[in-house]
Length: 171
Image (cartoon, rainbow, N blue to C red; front, side, top):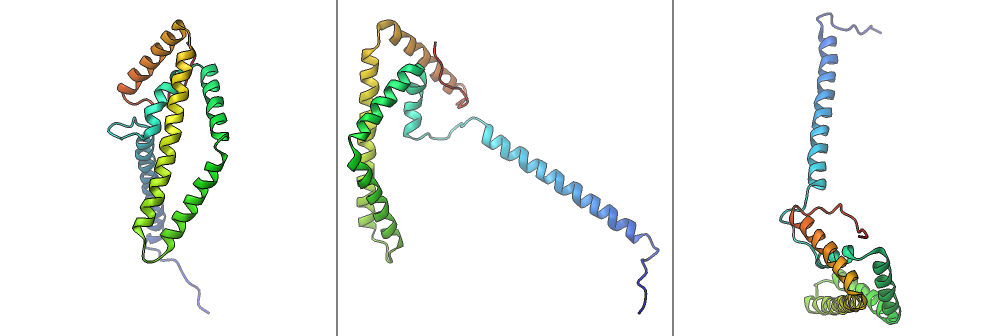
């Protein structure tokens, strides 16, 4: 057997420096990726279209904790009385899965399932609007004025950059 000798021309030192350089380059790249991802995740949502829940959020966040709790209780009671609807919702999702896995795709059947789901969501939205309206009607004039002030503050914060970090508060 022959012994393997390291070349004495300094290439061993170059390999160490090359490894250090590659490590530093990788660390800097990861740092830049982290900064970019963090900025994207933490920046306000300028230009992003919000969903239907975003339309309701300022109203619910402007409610006091007690009002929000009462509204939530009212909605849960209303949904509990619609127990059979949960079964229909699950049934629709199972139907959608079956349609999606069948070849060829039956777009008409999928559209029907999506329409049923959309109609149920619309009915729940109306139920929520009605519960909010009833709760606001039950408030005294001073309570409603406080609610209006908190709602205006919430809308001002949203207009100034979509700050989603604010939390509900009592005034």
